[in-house]
Image (cartoon, rainbow, N blue to C red; front, side):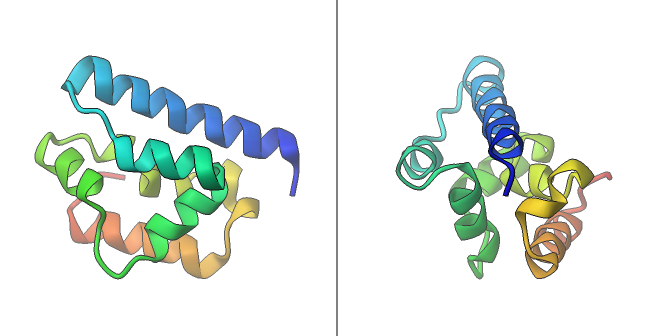
Length: 102
């Protein structure tokens, strides 16, 4: 796994967090704790593989900002090598279930 790619993925997730905080007045504390404890890829895997969407996913859906979810970042082509195909499909399915506009 390319460290530079992991770093870019992590930076992109942190930018999404910043947008949540500044634009939506929402602080995803659970995700941030997991991000710092597990790292960006492992945190994303945990959220994507959970049977139900995380509370943060639901909050972002309510605010019509699914583009800021971990799932929306996992499905980006440039990060395919960081995840199993099954994980990418789970993220895509969750977004489809919530009517994300790809």
